[in-house]
Length: 282
Figure (tube, rainbow, N blue to C red):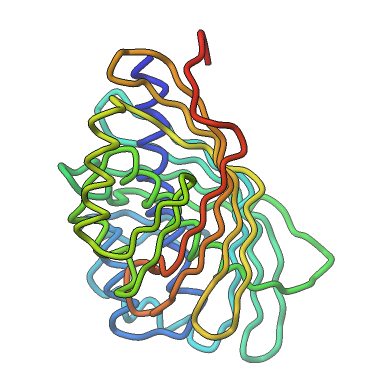
């Protein structure tokens, strides 16, 4: 049983990093954004693509200058995360890549990513290998920004992981200074001590849990905030070792400082779709 939970929790960690991979290419470069890109790479990372193979993250600034003035969008279509026998993690993914260059030439094709990440103690994993292969050309071109989705999904996966493996300290990076969280019980949390108390109450009741999402929708409010609407299917094992399920609907308002690793939760409103309940089987 622990296996399903562990696999899904690891997927959140990997996807938090994977959705970060694209962000540096989708907004103008700054030193902080390039540092955030280095933050997801191991020192000896190996990147292979049609333009050749590079090793190590030194010189990344120089390699990125090629993309100055490009409009890029990376629409993630599917992802599969696995734990490898050596304890590392693998991610296979397919995306639709859209690109408009300064000379107004347009490119629209599908790519397959084969990647490996190294797990780290009490930290997000880092990419050790990325292999990119073009898999097809799409004739019809309608450029759509993918930044709002990639930015908010990265946050969502990290948030979910920290809900499943509660760590109050790490949440500080994900909460806006003036956050306001309305729980499904209608309880409102607006201060860190109360938030920490709530997290602690979860660990006192629940041994392990995981979330899967559906009906994800993000709106770019054009004022450095994003509105997210999403449903979560929750599974857990309580301290009596009983299986539990629930379904909730979340409305989030996220603030976006593009130079930070993640967006931050400003407001959250949770509605119960299916109450928390004990079940015989998942």
